[in-house]
Image 1 (spheres, rainbow, N blue to C red):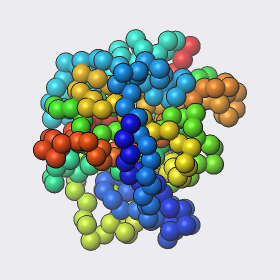
Image 2: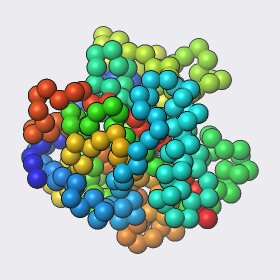
Image 3: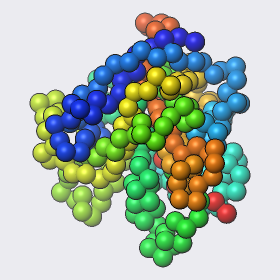
Image 4: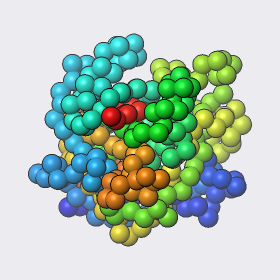
Length: 297
């Protein structure tokens, strides 16, 4: 166990009626406050955590793809590896639709950096919208009647994620009131109405406009997470590129959802953080996250 600083949304500081945050940088309408919390390394007991009970799981699963520098190779090769992993590890899967991936590198020229804020990638409404956005209308409505999830498949690239590792909050230690909807802002592009796929097209944001929403549009909704001293933080110390973490962003059968199952995790808050035990000469974190719609029999 170690003690680290975790950043949480400060709702009272928001300068807009509804908080918003930009997908491509630190721009946001609210401030964050630091909170000191204990965080536990699960390397010796990772099997105790599953996407069902805690909302996350870690597996050893080496990938054929190693560098993740070519967008087409990621889509045409690695996506198939991710789907096979999900079908192997999650019983009852009948369909997987991969709709997005993000590569983060802690380098000055990288448009996507590790996110140091406790959050969840999608709200329930945004999750249903993803189903309707990525599947034909009739099929989408039928699939929405059954169990579906959004799973984020997270993997370090090239070197262990010792620098800015990923921490998760056990869903069992959260309350529904901890979660605050936040609009997710994307840069407007000339072709946005026809093609809103940003994969491989990210650019560095302008630091002078971090606090302005001009030139951006709402294309998603995430959840900020309010601080709660009951939250239990965990991480896989020095997680390697041969390991993956499954992060549940939403489960339509999660406890508290219509038709939900008691004890079933709905979601997993997560964040990058600074591990005080990480050597100062550790290589900068690189990681890929692949977001998947998962449908069940």
